[in-house]
Length: 187
Image 1 (tube, rainbow, N blue to C red):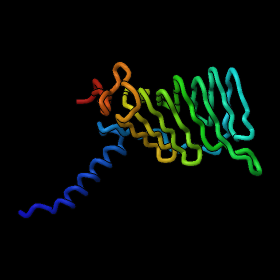
Image 2 (image 1 turned 90 degrees about the horizontal axis):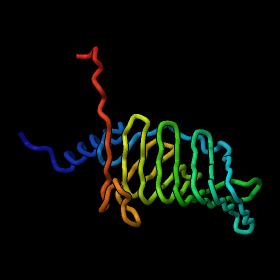
Image 3 (image 1 turned 135 degrees about the vertical axis):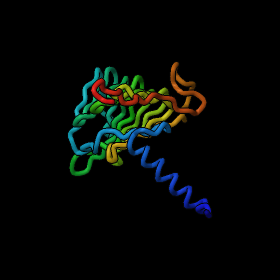
Image 4 (image 1 turned 90 degrees about the vertical axis):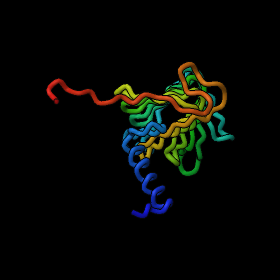
């Protein structure tokens, strides 16, 4: 038997890995998440203090910041919201710092810093990142990218600063995926 060329073997391997990642069972740090997010939904916010910097087209929120958009919620110590002001005010980006938590459906992600790009429907979190799902799955790393359009979250070990206790160190990802439990009625 003649072995398949290396390029075909690699392509097959990549398809297999891609399938596992999309299924949310690969240990390399990707999880299938909740389906597409409605980025056109209104963005509501509350905070202890607000500073409108109209010439710079941004809003600074500080102290117990709580931002919601549809089922998405972001909390932080401080956020900077950048907007455009054409026919109507359009929010473009939210930069959050200090004890940042993003919750959506059955997931909770936390980290030091987050950037929510409303146009690209991406949330990027860095620094001591942890992603937890209601079923008990846990991923730790340095950087998390949540694609709100595709519903896929990717985590890697790259980060600025030392890892948090229990988090991956040295550019690595750590985590736990829960295996299905066998029902007493199954054999």
